Image 1 (cartoon, rainbow, N blue to C red):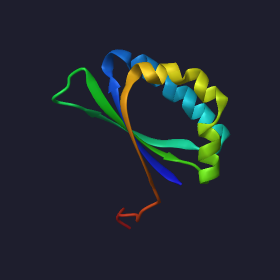
Image 2 (image 1 turned 135 degrees about the horizontal axis):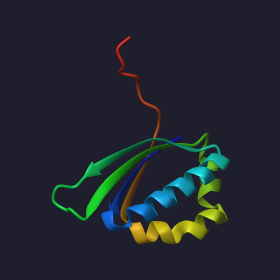
Image 3 (image 1 turned 90 degrees about the horizontal axis):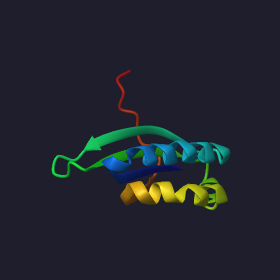
Image 4 (image 1 turned 135 degrees about the vertical axis):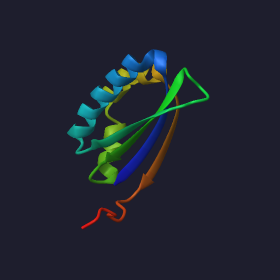
Length: 101
């Protein structure tokens, strides 16, 4: 399964956000998941915020559910709560490859 997560993050809490994401990536790996790619998007109208987009994969919905229920994730949730003001998650599937051959 492929997830697209779009988080709006406080710039003044960027270290907490990076710490959370690094630790969450280790937990994802325990369940077969991975943050495949990230993109940082500055917000011109809000200098104190930015968006970070993550492409995340898990081998199955069960693996994703196991990650979400991992008690270790609860232990670091405070880092995320202090840094992230909004999150949008979309579940998709692998799309076509548009790379030239």
